[in-house]
Amino acid sequence: MGDNYYSGNTVKLCTDNLSKEEVLNLIGILESKLSIKASTNRRIKDNKDIVWMIKISSLSLENLKNWVISYIIPDMLYKLGFKKHE
Image 1 (cartoon, helix red, strand yellow):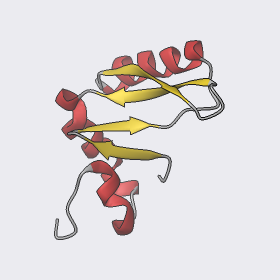
Image 2 (tube, helix red, strand yellow):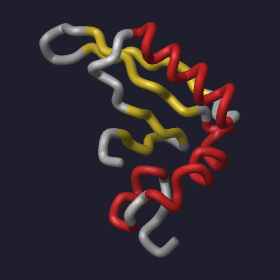
Image 3 (cartoon, one colour):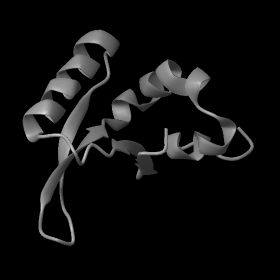
Image 4 (cartoon, one colour):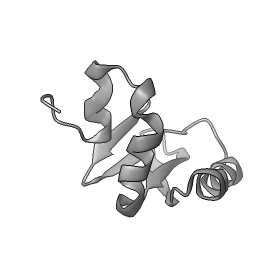
């Protein structure tokens, strides 16, 4: 719940401890099982390590929200782009 963030009308899932292959596998599962389109997002850490994140397509954001909304506590809804009053 806490290892992601909302940015620019998309959600990025922090999967720093996974290999690129594992991230690609998860992206495949998101698409095939939940119809959520996603891509990889490369990030270079301060120590120069390359890590891979999952970037949910803005076209799939509503679908993602529908799948996870019932599991998210109200204080974390901002991580999906919801405003406080929603």
